[in-house]
Image 1 (spheres, helix red, strand yellow):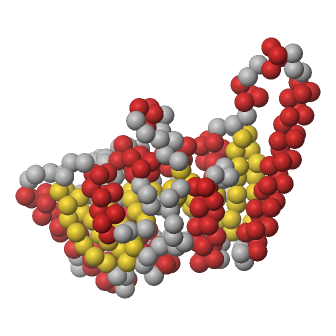
Image 2 (image 1 turned 180 degrees about the vertical axis):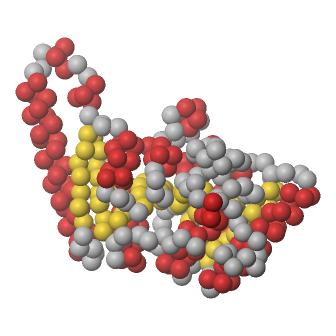
Image 3 (image 1 turned 180 degrees about the horizontal axis):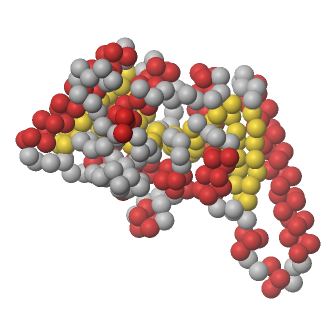
Length: 304
């Protein structure tokens, strides 16, 4: 089993309520893991895209404006850093960057070697959801590390009930590993949810068998759990309804939950819907091309 070793937490902030919730969870997680926190605020400056010369404004005005903006943001970031320090987190750094939010976040996640990105999400809906997406969802789609998206309505600090949805597909084992790490971190219960979209009875039996395999892993690791199997075609709706009924406070999912082939692991609509519409935090994991974690192994296998 791979260990989710959290030592570097990256937190993109926009000074919104959802962003504040992300900082609270980052502080809690940093305390649990003796981890550092790196804050980043991205400025998508209108000065870059707008022709201010048409208004008779000089380059000097633009530079002065950006200097004032940067100094104001630096003051806010220093204040936020101080507040986090007072919470017992000594290793806190911050960046103020200009550019596209999701691109800069991904660049910083790589350059700082972040173990996890924790960011607030405002979500999008309707036509924009399938055409534009959101910054958080785009980060999920491009990040090499897990991304914990925090919604504005998230209320709790830490996690006690983790929903682990899975389908009969590659990479099932990876989500189990991450869920176990989080459960041990917070002494939480894992709620296994097998999702069957195939009316064939053999497909259902396979989901049930894989759920038993997950139970064996959790028993060996000493993690509390419950198990349920649901059948239906609207995967995101099944997951969100089940999460509400179980009063779950986190969803751990593979970001390719709706993909059925290992070559199609780019984030798809189910992951997008969960990131955008879940009322509770979602930990999204991009699959790794690692044969040892691509599938659940058979019960009794010594490497299981």
